[in-house]
Length: 569
Image 1: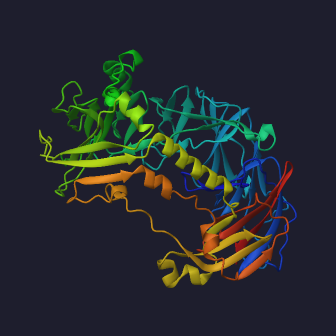
Image 2: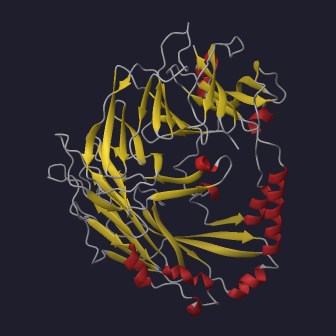
């Protein structure tokens, strides 16, 4: 298990999560055994800090380190120049004790700390002369929910893109959105249903009080222009409802209290009926798909306003949108399909720049088929029927049918293949901590950068080994390539997916970067006698020079984490 994971927050404030590890650095020193062009600083971390956040707290263009402990935060400022240690880890330069039993904190604006205290008040601490000022109450008397403890909670966001910071307060089953007005006050809260994520952690890798608990996170709000007025509208998408609130910048409330478009998914499920084993058709087990539904908000007629595709079983309804919303009581078009409809979506199939409707159906599967597949292989056909876009509606009949044959081995054979993969994973070699990075100017500049060439750092045999220009990053997959896994082409109507081959070719690929340099001598090898299998490496550019700065976490126990920071000159 690695000591920490590297995370990038939604606010582009970068963080190093240390899990049960802590940070209150003391006793740093500059060593000769360092990477060329880097300053080395050793540190030791006691056990009450949960994370490190990289922030430019004093607006000097250099990233500082915000250390989060159980009920306090500490700032370590980076200094310019290379003649001295640029981080003073003998003690924090600014510290702040958080009030309350339940604290949800966030980094706000041009660096300030904002916190939801005990779910009922929001407070802010500015930074002045590298010290935290007294707290200022931003909002009081709110009715929020927080579990005990101190949590990173991204609740301060500019929801409506007006440059002012709004607040998202979690409550029971919903979020309260407080939109900030131009005078700094907040509009009455908008209550939005939300699937708030409360995660329980029940693993006792270290002490229970550190690794067992709860974490609360607020899901990202979906904001985009739905009604074509160039204003970001608010979309609340939960398991129970799909609500759209149209933005109204000139009104007293930026978002209305009631949604302009509202789809009650609970009512849809009640209308379709619940699964009943007594009424299950054993000759058509896939018939249960008649109880499924989908809702798609997407512009289908090119007017810049989202339309709604509502599928209930094999019934597909089109509702055209307008600036004011849409009439959900009367569909503009209804298509019905026999068979077991699996899904629908829109994609331009005939390359006329208009999205066509794809309706996917699956073969009937009987109970007899299931018993047969226990012993022999089988095939299930998936069929896509494509209805061309005709402007404000889709064609009444499909223009094309695509068939995907899903071939799979017998259940007994499949279980055996899965067990083989599991055994290969268990018997595989230990993971070697490694990381791709840009450590040299040669890697940063010229053809190496254009080709995606990276340096490699690895913890091998008690050493930090560096290999220059060792690996080539894989290009990101083409998001525009439709049905890439099938190698889809317009001229081909029949495809096949062989599940047996997929399982047989599955491989647990670990240490691939390290294996790629196994025949090379490292450009540098720094002795790290304290390195353990739990050690790890993480990268961040702390001084904006394009070169990665290197955190090496060496060892962790119940009282301390030891490590090294390599900072580029």
